[in-house]
Image (cartoon, rainbow, N blue to C red):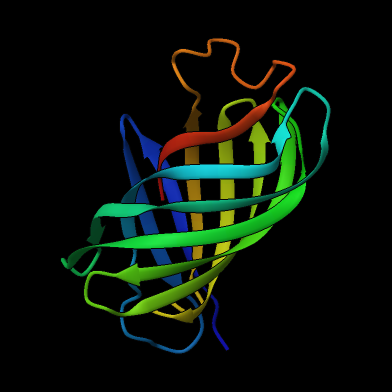
Length: 165
């Protein structure tokens, strides 16, 4: 049995994904790079001290360019839980992707955050790209009118994010 992996490498402002497959000869694996943007909502709000949270994510994967020359986009929803604060945390969740060609994917993932930066590691478990790993770097943007972000007594309830996968 072979394990396929996508590896991400930052090159300037671009994110490159490489695919590899081991074992018996297989068709060339597909790799892709996508721009991500969406909205993160958490209950309870993130504050300066870590606590258990639940969250939802909705967003878009756009400008996806596959190693076989295909191009597509999609929308995603995700739910997760973990222990996090404004400064750090770890979570796990599941995402459902609907691609522009009407195919679907399901991915389980874990996240690690340090301040506004999030590293996501996942595995596609169903549908398109099943068996592939995914790696993303995300940056959260807090409301520009709230300069201290979630380090207030009220905490952070939602934030926009952008990234590459």
